[in-house]
Image (cartoon, rainbow, N blue to C red; front, side):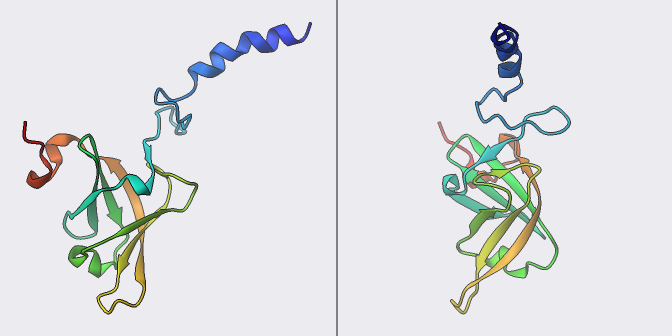
Amino acid sequence: MRLLPLLATLPALAACTAPDGTGDVAAAGTAQECFFSSQVDGFADAGPDKVLVRLGFRQAYELTLRPGCPNASYATAIGLVSRGGDRVCTGRPAQLLVPRASGTGAERCLVSDIRALPQAEWPETWQRRD
């Protein structure tokens, strides 16, 4: 009956998954926050080498870009591509796509950091009016 000890470990393994069911756990033991790029429904410039992206009315993230992405502050549209799987996650590399003003392709800007943005730091235009 070697199956019984294996079944006994299943509850312990289930406790190791993230509470949202994603199963992603960072090396330090904290859960990664992930989203699909198709969930992004708004963005805003946040100063030099920073862009804010919004996911509905409940989540927003700050993307820190590597220096050298000058058109991000003037963009009227963006794209976001994960470089480590299907989802964009904190702690994983990603790329921000910014269409060129000429309309010929897009610049690829490396995202060096992604952090969840507390609602208190959201731009005024994103604040939900009840």
